[in-house]
Image (cartoon, rainbow, N blue to C red; front, side, top):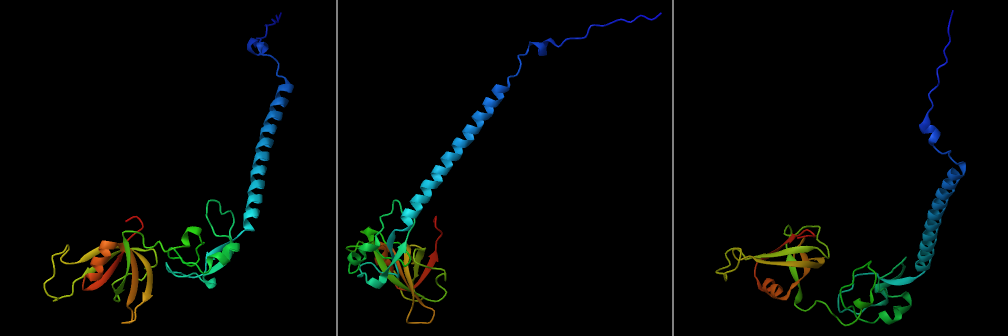
Length: 226
C-alpha cells in the first residue's frame, strides 16, 4: 500500500510583501526624461541660432587693413590700405571702411605690417620708438645671421672688435658688444652680395654702444621664451 503525502509549498514572503509596480509611474518617468532631452535640444538650437545671426551681422561689416608695410611716421596713402570683411570683431578697435578718407593723409604712429587689421591707435603722431628705446640699422655680412630672420624676430646683436685693431677699451666678453633687440626689417645690403641691412629695435643706451663699436656684426636668433 502506497501513501502519498502532500508537502506545503514555500511561500516567498519577501516578494509577497512588495507593493505592485505601477505602470503609471514608469510612464511618468519616461515622460520626464523626454522633457529633459527636449529642453536641452531647445537650448542648443537657441544658442546656434543666435550665433548664426551674430555671425551674419558682423560678416557684413567692412574694415580697413594694411595693404603694404608702412614705417612709423610715414604718411598713409590710399594704396597703403584696403577694405576687408571681418566676422565678429568683438573687442577690437578696428577702423571702419567708411573712415578711409580720414585715415589717408595721416601718419602711422607705429610701423604697420602688411596684412594686419588697422587699429585706431596706430594712426596719429609718431609714438615709436617708445621712450628709452631706439632703432638702428646694422650691416650683416653673409653667414653672420640666420636666413630665417623676419620682422618681429628676437636676436642678440654681437659686435666683435676687428682683429689687430689696436688697444680697445675694456669690455665684457673680451671686447664683444652684446645687446638684445627685436628685428624691425630685413633688406638686402648694397655693399656686398649676400650682405643684409637689418633694422633692430633695442634699448637706447645699448643702441649707442652697438652703433659706436667697430667690428663685424653677428645676429643670434632667440626663441620666443628667451
